[in-house]
Image (cartoon, rainbow over all chains, first blue to last red; front, side, top):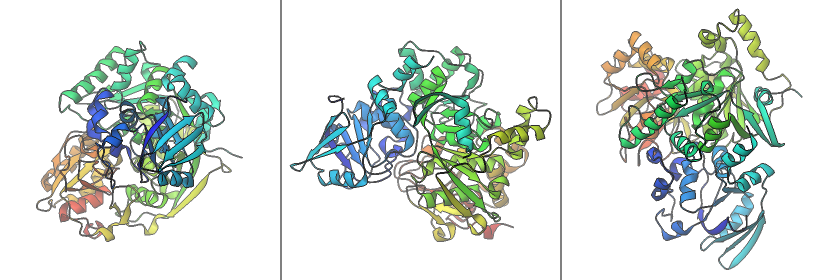
Length: 173
Length: 428
């Protein structure tokens, strides 16, 4: 998993960022994932955040607070990240469906304790995340922090298989 | 230690337990609509896996934008329509017979106590009202459900929600669930089943129980669930009459799903509803809720009556109680979207549609429409809507718009006054 995950990160400093903010419902009439690409986080009103910024365009990782991805079941909220090159979200907690959608697509949804997320937010700016197994290295503001996260066997296997469809198609008749 | 209803359903449907925390369930019903299913269908075709596990267990409706409003939504509808035909899915509801999925499918008797149900729609938790485990899922889960008839879940804990007391006139299941979400917050029930218990639930109709379960997801809940009883059996009787000699037998059989007296819960939440007043949301999160009296006088531009939360006949009846003989306030527009053709027909027969029309409402066909800002009443920036729907997220009904969630009766009172108001003084 070393190469597939991590990269430049962007910090979204709010709890309860919902799926409508990640991808508004009016774009759910698209029938391809690629078509969602320009609309990532379009309705997120957050001080200092610009969904069209270069920093957002270059981000591979999102760091955020609690209950990320609440609301709708739309997997479009994961696909819009996927087609924009985002491979993992690090948060204090996730809404159930969003979290499951991430792993179902073979992407990482990493939960850290609030105090750890606070530490990462202190480094926000030119943040870079490196993943090695279940170890995270986070660099920013000239400092480096290390964290380990839990990944249960099933979620690990989903990521390894490339997603739930690949996993289930092999395993269940 | 005894078992909860959710635990019993899980045990009866376990296909696989990849870890002690994860379970793969066999599914009784997979529901599909035109927003989240077409990409699953296209992906299955691309992978050479264009088949379904059991066409009789797949229920399909075009409901979010119907009749189609443009080429894109027409394409979504066509993909679903062609697929249903190709896969011999008989329970497919198209223009003329379609309605909001979580109102339509219960009417058809598709959900029974003890069932496992998924749909690519977060408000699938509605069907827990029938004593089923019903959960919203993403498109990949839906795709695997269609193909294999299974879905994975982390084994959820159950939060027992005890509702005691008696609801006052003018206070409804919608007010109860808004109050619960306010207290639990939008993440208070994440990864949990919300089991609604107590005399208040026992006394509720199936319609009210569906309203209650519908918004479990707004507290983060995996599913809302009610214990199936005589009310459930009577609602389902047209569909289960040949399975049981009498309703009593059905009620007795349903009891096997009931949570045991010594079942284990992760927590309890108690609410005495006797003093509850109508509830209204004020912000962009469904836990931002106040008593209607604190919101008194907030001006609105539009009233929206409908959706999987409150577009059923009982909701329309309660709104019509207040609307009959009254008019929309000047400058306020009203939209009624009966949730299904059956609701529409009943409302016509009872003179309810006429009451809405006389009050100045526009009556649309059954559709999800404006609830998620898709069609039939999208807000402009700066506009305010009093809505009987379930989400008040920023931009939900249109970019820059503001949504206040409330019961149909409070929405009706707001319609005639032009500002948010307590409906109770207006009741005869």
